[in-house]
Image 1 (tube, rainbow, N blue to C red):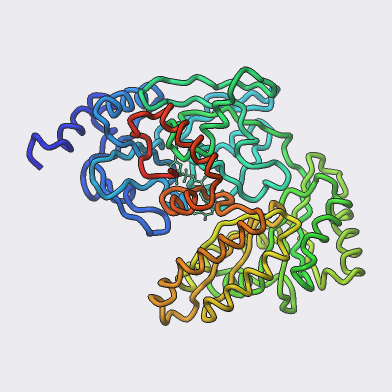
Image 2 (image 1 turned 120 degrees about the vertical axis):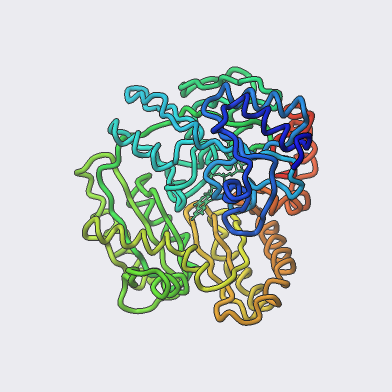
Length: 474
Ligand SMILES: Cc1cc2nc3c(=O)[nH]c(=O)nc-3n(C[C@H](O)[C@H](O)[C@H](O)COP(=O)(O)OP(=O)(O)OC[C@H]3O[C@@H](n4cnc5c(N)ncnc54)[C@H](O)[C@@H]3O)c2cc1C
């Protein structure tokens, strides 16, 4: 590069704003920031900028706004839809938030804490636990993803059935807007009806409306008791009735209700060291259910057992294993959380992150499985996920490694069929992973036209020069 190219010029200017060690320009040091988690997208960038505080983020945004430079915010880079990867122009910058990593305060009496955007999710959970409190957001990527990325994607995860999505766990947000102005909305209030709810707009906006720099998060009493069961269903048709029965026995103590097909157990046992089948015989479908309580003396195992006995009498459940200790509980969860990795090791897969109303789950699965059998007879359906929320990772795997190209070429046809079916079931084409660049055209096709006009108007109002995560979502 000659001294006058935009890259060199921009990098020098950015160093002035964030310090010399906060700007990466070398191909090798930038490489991890330019490739998405699923290796679907590889971008280019003028620089990777790593500010240490909100003021530095503000200076960078002001500069990029003035010079019309696209800014791609990046947290843990675990997005499943290419949301944090720059385009191929080489003109954008990646704004990596990892160095904003302070827990600013923990207010145990108010059941809240304030974390900067770059805090790893597991660190936020630990900070809550150190104050004898519980932060319920939990997902397979929690050792890598950052709380800013979780807010930006409105992440879901394993405890949504009890605590809700990320949006329901947030009391306030601090963010830098496109022109560099700092929005200080870091309140820790449970009640605050003062005009439009800007934090809710920023949550789930995937970096297209502002850069989240810190969040005030809701905490709950620490969890002191668990009852965790690995349950074999006689038929997936009974999954909703089982959830209702568990609710009748356990009330709101159900914190996870995850559905797994037989093939998910087989893949994890085959590919992930140490994973074993919790039950003796093979069954077509399983549920991993966990009840939790803040009091150590709550009779959770009795509640779980009572519900499962009834479900067996009614012929919905064939067998079940109740974790007798923490080691067994961890083994059940390891099986569940290893499914994406086992699937990846088994071969390429076509993924759909969808949701339907909970009561429609069995009907949807039956119809969607028939579509797969018709359109991709050589594919293996690996449909699993957060059934308690009606959310499914509806994936189709190629197992034996042959005919991969032909398999992948049929992706658009299968996607259209699945998303059309989801729409017929009044569902969502993106339950929790967001839109990013992967589903932009799908959003344009399936979203309400009136909703799209409103979304574009909001984008135009907050980011008139279109510098925030260009090419994502809209
Ligand atoms: C093994 C595994 C399991 C997963 N399980 C789940 C799950 O159960 N539920 C679920 O919802 N997701 C899940 N995900 C997807 C992913 O982890 C989540 O979307 C997560 O919230 C992304 O966080 P991140 O810090 O990695 O964000 P990134 O991938 O870095 O970014 C995601 C998006 O947010 C934007 N962004 C990042 N930080 C900021 C910021 N501070 N301000 C503004 N915009 C920002 C990016 O530009 C991008 O658009 C999983 C991923 C993996 C790899």
